[in-house]
Amino acid sequence: MTAPSNPPLLRATDLRFARNDQIVFGPLSLAVESGEALLIEGENGAGKTTLIRVLAGLLKAQNGQVTLNGLVATPMLQATGISYLGHLPGLKADLQCIENLEHLGALQGHRSDRTVMQALKRVGLLAYTFTPFRQLSAGQRKRLALARMWRSQAPLWLLDEPYANLDLPGIELVNQLIAEHVAAGGAAILTSHGAYAAPPVRTRTLHLQAATA
Image (cartoon, helix red, strand yellow):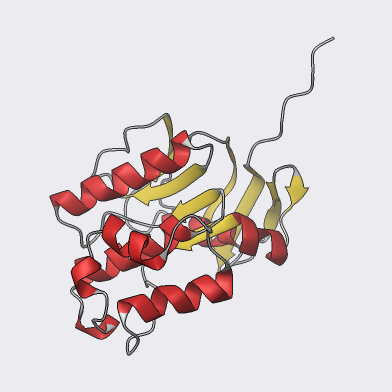
């Protein structure tokens, strides 16, 4: 008798999202397993950001269902099971780098084996430990947001255009972090408009096309 397989880390079934009666995407279905990445590609306006925000629980789809480990996604499950990196870093402008990570770690929880100083070193910001966030460049701000994600306990990472505003070493950093996370049994869903290569891990691709009127 064959043992039942584990449910995917995330499954979305028949998702459909519309804005002002204009379909943005759907219906579409997708799944991501532990140990893999899903790359969502598409031109501007195809609905990549909207889809990521729906999966994160920040927007509500008109139809369809999202499950995490086989359970219907609730705000509590999404808060603990998903770490989200959007276009805005979600960090406080007047707080220092160390203060931002300490604050978010206390608020959202963090891995006990990854300290704030380790996180800053991992993303190349150790020299900016006491620098206010507002004084960082766009690329450095993205690196600090990645440090927050790296400390997260969440098994699923949702990254919306994670390569934006990064130089080549920064792009390589994103790929390394995703590769490490996936190798440890996590999973990642990331978006790209096609300008960057997929991370060097087991990756499937979902291509979104802009809805036509």
